[in-house]
Each structure stands twice: as C-alpha cells, then as structure tokens.
Image 1 (cartoon, rainbow, N blue to C red):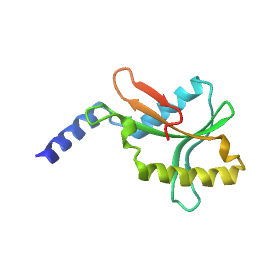
Image 2 (cartoon, rainbow, N blue to C red):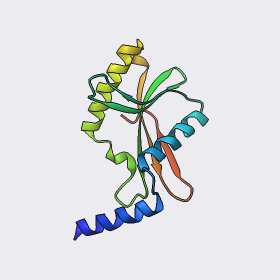
Image 3 (cartoon, one colour):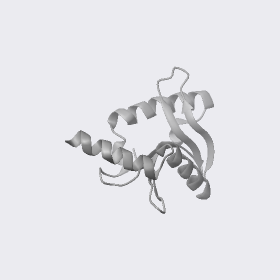
Amino acid sequence: MIGLLYRAADRLRRRRYPENHGRIGEDLAHRYLRSQGCTVVARNYRTLAGTGEIDLVVWDGGRLAFVEVKTRSSTDFGPPESAVDAEKRDRLRTAARDYVRRADVDWKAVRFDIVSVILQASPKIEWLRGAF
C-alpha cells in the first residue's frame, strides 16, 4: 500500500517538475548564495578516488563553506535537511578534507552548511550555516 502511495506521489512530482529536482535546487542555491555575497569556487566537486561529492564550495567572508543542497517538493516527509544523516556528513567531511588538502586551505577556516530548498510556486530557500 505504501509503495503505491510513493509511486503516485512520484508521478505527481514528475508532472509538476519534469526536470531533475536536485539540479533545480542546486541552481537555486547557487544563485541564492551568490546573492548573499558568497563566492562560489566549485560545483559538484568530486574526489579523485570517487569517494565523495560536494554540491557547492563557497567562500563566505573568510570561511570556506562546503554546502550540501537538499531539495524537496514539499515537507510532507520532513524538512529537506533531515536527509543529511551521519553517514552523509562523514562522506562530506572526507570529500572536504580532499579539497582542503588539494587547495592548501587551513582546516580552521572550514565550515559545513546545508541549503534547504522547497520547490513551491515561490521556492523556499533556507541557508543553515555551520549545520554540522
């Protein structure tokens, strides 16, 4: 029964947003962070070993923020940021260490953020600085 409901919800979402939710959310987050004065230095950064990926890497003042973007069409199943669990945070930290090592940045300048995007008629964007 629950599977049927999920499939129906997926069909409705695809009709409303035929494109990729994640890509739309990342584009909105990118523009939002730039409008807030951040300098975006990387999008979809992947480690050489392929063990991790970071949606956005931005400078916010003197802090290098590794940003995970989570996009949902509604909050029916909880807020988007709730999808960033301990395992995901560990993978982000691993990818961030790789980036910091390659870019020669001081780890003390690093911060982990989440940008939560809810796709509505007027998308709702929330930036959680220092989320973990």
